[in-house]
Image (tube, rainbow, N blue to C red; front, side, top):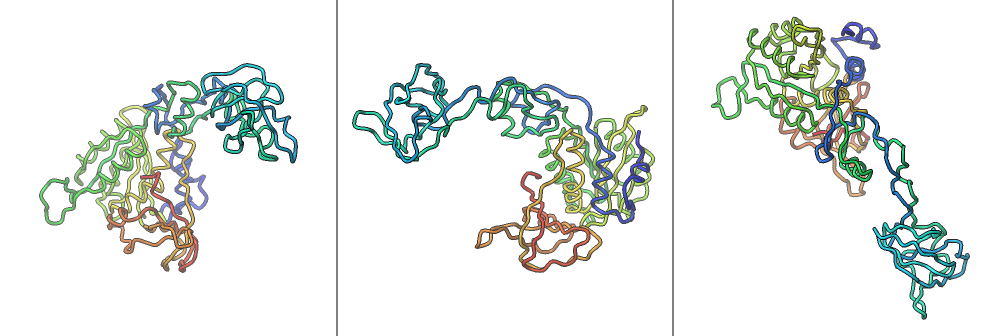
Length: 428
């Protein structure tokens, strides 16, 4: 098994005390691989899952040439530039009921959207572009349509034998529709990733318990549950554990034995209880980083041993501050888990918006400021912060709809400058 030290040696400029965000992504990409195993599920159970092997189209889509419009099908070669065309309507073709008669050059067939094109016909004129002739036929105005117009060709979407969905594709609502269009009722997907998580700290209170001086309610546990549930993994909630070595060791062992990945919050910064860090190292191979980012500087990443064998599970130790925990999850853990799920799309797309206020920023770290993206009067995207950016202000994550991403080397931002924003929609 690849050790963390050997991975670190392959990352340019690796420094666990001042780790750039890009280096963290590179490290995790080297460290993690998709889990093994798959299962076959019905389409209604496949949303959000990951395609386990290429789906080969068993049919052509569409299966036949058909009309893209309600109108009249005819021979496109009958059209003449600058001249109207009058046609006799001899039949009607309905969707689901193919019409197979012969049609002369001066004739047409009334056709509905999706209906099979009658043999030899290659053009459909929309009904709204025609007028009725005195003899009951139709007249197509000069240059109203080109030959071949409004015809969907057999296999123009997918040809039989082609890859319809590639391995690693997430199954979206559109993908569900595509699979159904192939006549497939079931799909092989990667097995659901098992992720266990728990909070640490003597100060943690469970919601519903009476307040206690010096204690805080455990918001991280519930925020992480929401983030994991949206990701579609099998969520294993282990609650909270006090800063007590035996309890923490038992919880880490339990988590490792039940999951592919373990997430903790709290207990990974230099000021936290030394036994937390010591136990993580004792039970596996763990690197403790101080990442050049704000919020979320402390983070632990590595492996925990599973049982008495050589198996292991991934460990992500997140900071205890609520916003820092959520940001580090979105920036690092989410794409890492997607990779473990076998997903081929792990990068989070960002959009650009004009900043409406000055932002303080010093080069040498990446900052993720909570922002609100909206439309300006001219229709362009603009963004402002939610105000105070303290890492304990969880309400700011509620009010924001994205994170303003200020790269490592960037300095202060002036109003009117463009910035990148990682939108929450699709993430949480």
